[in-house]
Length: 446
Image 1 (cartoon, rainbow, N blue to C red):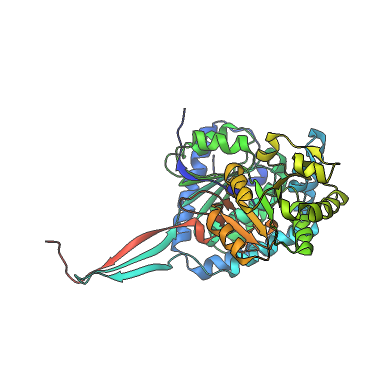
Image 2 (tube, rainbow, N blue to C red):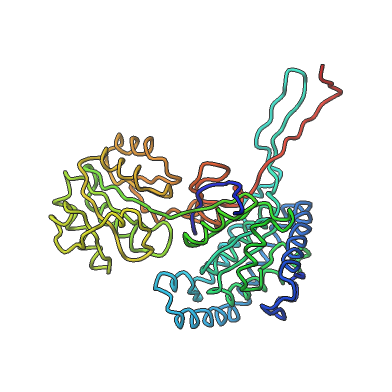
């Protein structure tokens, strides 16, 4: 799971990988190799588009089975990645995102199966109307084409992205971070084997095999028109580079600065439970709360209870002066804390005068990802919904529900926080565009 900001066209200031296991990171001509990957993806996308929904469903179910069958190989590859990551000194949040075990791998396979069970988005009639001259006009969903996905440490993205692209008739070119190279290779090998066995184009899912960062530049240049969209999923430096250098449209993100408001009408038990889950269930995901805003009317009573639950769970609290006056053990917050996506057990805390002040704080600091209000006042909740312009808004529910799987999408490529094309969880439906189909009976324009 991750999050995207805008769909935009940026500015710019090898061979087929069917024999994946035999390829090395050394290529005689990286540009030519990447171009061939792009051409193979384009051809695969055309084949996928001509296949039936049942074909794509069959392929996805086979992929899920192949991931399960290859579990020993995938987990062994992941352990090699984890060993290298520890040696490099990666932090706990990065290690958590990278790690696989039997349960997480089963979750990956189950997500692919969930995607297989989704309604096929291709060919959906989005709208249809008839003009006074008798023309029958329909807007019909079609694949985007070839999607380049550039991501960092989470190997589950490999399967999720590939599955969602398959469901939506798109070919995927995957470029993982060096941290997850072995895991991603093992997952993609299983996926491609299943596709080939089921008669689907195996080049619908390709992994860029080189660690050379120049490969990213080739993808951002569009591979001579063979890449239609780029999706970056990772840290700020990666996303900023992609948004700056891409010659093709980008579904991009910045931080997930998620806020939780504890309103003066909050139920105390819900407040403690939701805040603890929103921050501490998994601190390394983009739906993890980063800032807690507590109404002054209930702060004296509620803040110590929430703080105790959080600190007992291992969370460091960084509070403003009003919060520290109530819970002195908090670290003093600086302005940087209101704009930091920690992805760690750290939470910024502020006591605010009222709902207006909380909404103003979100308006100033939010990245447009996910926000939550805890309140029993329906009018306050409706004001929150009407005022805050983030992609996902929750009332009396944890921000950790900001996830395509939890939304019933099977999986997601990320959370789009922009306003163009896709917003919120990006699933199979969001990886489509549309065309107009116009039926006439001899009309000519005067």
